[in-house]
Image (cartoon, rainbow, N blue to C red; front, side):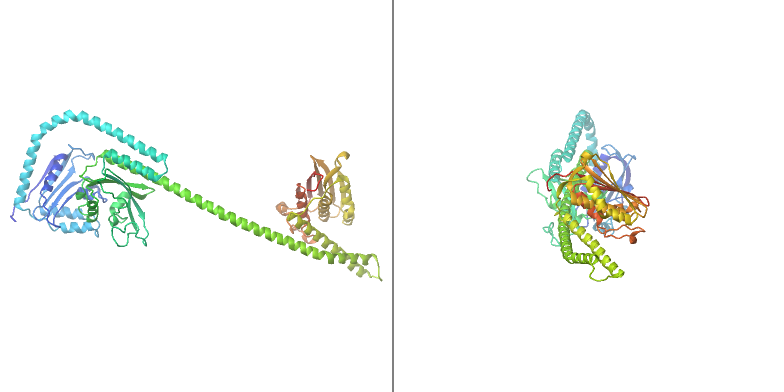
Length: 628
């Protein structure tokens, strides 16, 4: 190698001139195995980079015979680039400067990455250029700029002629693009079928942009125990998160299909490119050779499926990277215009909306099925519980009925014989013996009353009770109930018992179950007398109201606390009050009374004030004059 002085210069160039200078440097590239490479700013498109690198353009040629570095920064702060915008360019062949630039470029990548290791190797290559190659580049540079001067005047004239046509064509294309995007949006809103939306959208966009291939690439978590999706690429265990092409549209039959293809381990959540996609950044690759110069995995994959250029827009919703919309140019490289990038990005956003709608609908369908199954299960549980409750209730009623019947016979003997002994003396009875017999008789009577109440209640709850409908006099039943032992009982307790009939004589006749109406009045009056202290009053009022016989029992007794009114008609329940131990009872009287009232399709109401008394009111409708 001949020793020659290094060359370095700085100059303000147009963007066009800067690009041509970079192309001239690439023409000097002579592949020599792994010891030679061309790098441009395209290699940074897939990773997050600092702000000063985002506006920087560069071309680096590294080989054993010829190495060079071209770096450009925009002349103004404007981010808009055009063919005639100015660039502050620096071209150097100095090995040290080239190495320092490569080291800075290397440090943008993760230290354990393949790209970092490759750049580390290239940092050792730059040396003083071969003089022959250096001279060749100088001649190439001079020839190029001479040709540009000769073409300048002709180009200016041509530009003036076609500028209007170019603007008109651009406007027409912009309108067509907006129309296409509106069609995609309308389809997204109109349909909930995700496959139809995707197939329609990518077909229209591919045709509009004249793409070789347009695909939808989906990421998904995969089962580590399954090799289903990617077994055709390698036999190793698949990554915990991967993806594949799920939709595609091809320009013609000569373009190979990539449906179900995967980028395997080249694109995973651990890569910086993944993070850029997740944040919504797009990736425009004009030439895969430049962009993936440091990434052998992806470069090999893209060459395998015959891709020269590509554009990828992320499909993101709810901060989740669902997949990518990827455009492929297979035959040639392609500069992706801003309008093309905007259209593909907007379509990807609409696909994200469609996917989100589809997932919500799927979730709703699952929730609906789950809810329906839960309702079915709950219905079965409730049915089983109801059957069990009915069975238990039936067994209880049968048990009570059986026991009650078994008790009636010996109880009848006890009451009858004790009554006989009290009436007929078979010898002298002492006062104590007579008192004992009276206690036995009275206890038997109370026990018989309780058993009869239990039997009556069991029959009603089992649905076996039948009303015996007859005609009777309201005044007669009121007086007979009071005179049939209640008046004597009230007198013993020093309680004043009154009957107040509040109806006309011609309304005295009523139709209902006489025995059960008598039982209702008997229970209410007995209860009122029992809980009314000496000197108090109990009044039975009777009147007719809209084909209903109304029976009202008012007392001046101890009253019922408001919080216990809801428990008043519970079976075997006695109210908790200071007088509880002073009064007898089983707690069945009021429960049976309510059941008898409801058997007549009537109702019962209670009003009470502690220390002032209670008012029970019963409405019994007129019954049909047949058994019901």
